[in-house]
Image 1: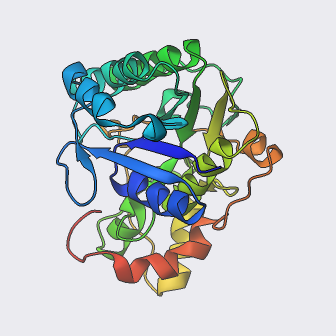
Image 2 (image 1 turned 30 degrees about the horizontal axis):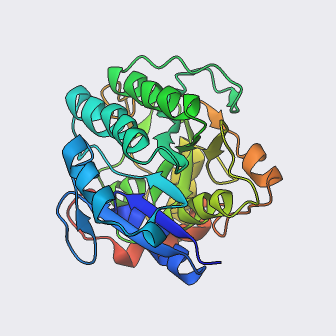
Length: 285
């Protein structure tokens, strides 16, 4: 039977999820703030906007699942409150019969000791933005939804680490022992689709979506230097003002692997050569 997926936020990740879902036989309804392409213009922070979308759908178009994959548009706490906290609440209120999967971030783990974090690990971030993500997670989970926490996403046209390295703007923080956790965009989309394709929706569950090879920063740059025949970046102080906060932890994807999913790109260094030509020179992705 044909199933309908509503993707709220057809951006970098959402567009790949849409394409993979189409290929898997889903009917897809995409929402975006701009309404570009084949998406429906809708502001998730506006309950009237979502109500209008719901009223425009036929009974056959009622979503079997919803994915909230909208971004904050690089905004601060106000944007996080509106897009994530209010956005999740609005989706749940508008489509009470449709299970919600919320795309969160591993930035909610505030660990700085290099320890391995699983879905059972405490999440006590020091940034207000990450605390708002936790609030949106709680809203979703309390309504029998599912939450996925994404590591740093990269893929075609986007990799902050590789972009800065190739543009000679990268730096190795102190001894380079901080651990980098990443996930390829295509793998993030396939993991979400895998969870939605289970016989039973993973209600109330939380999953980390990360690749299988967390890397110490120094090892990442050594690998890139070898791959691209460039010198190592210079040593710099810790970047305590980075958007995702300064943390140092090893994100485990064991629970997701145990569910039957496996990444196509388990190691960032293996994927980097194919990503490099897609990056625009002279700017950070």
